Amino acid sequence: MKALEIDQAGWIVREDDDDGIQHILSPNFDARPECAIDMIVIHNISLPPFEYGGTGVIELFTNQLNPDEHPYYAEIQALKVSSHFFIRRDGSLMQFVSCLARAWHAGASTWQNRERCNDFSVGIELEGSDITPFEAEQYATLVQLIQALIARYPIQHVVGHADIAPGRKTDPGPYFDWDKVNTLIKI
Ligand SMILES: [Zn+2]
Image (cartoon, rainbow, N blue to C red; front, side):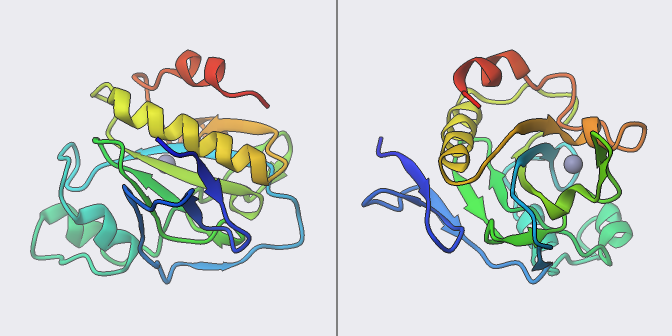
């Protein structure tokens, strides 16, 4: 498998081969303030909750959720959110926002006395939940993606959403294997 890399415009590409990567533009982003991109925030998401493989997450990030499709969609339909990346159960990778822009994934958040983590972070959503282990294919893509981000930006911190929004968020949840990821990445 060819290596992943982030291009000058902040988009992930696979050298000479875009297999398994989709770029789907989300309107939910704005400019970052002047600061280094030094954090990666890992999340989990599934729509409908605990169901995998559908188009709900793509619809959420592109403001196209149909509130009639599921009761939960009616609740969250008005949310304007996004993540830079989404890794499906089979390890395939989608990008919704350039890394150079600010995606809206972290919400109210703090890390080491810095607030608004969206300003300086890249968000990665894993298709999953707090009640299911993640797939080996997801870890494989995640590690490659983190390595590509480290190669392009001065990443210092890889954290979970729960770490920067404790009490409000629990993802990526108890099944996320931090040891597996931390032993494979070098910061
Ligand atoms: Zn999250």
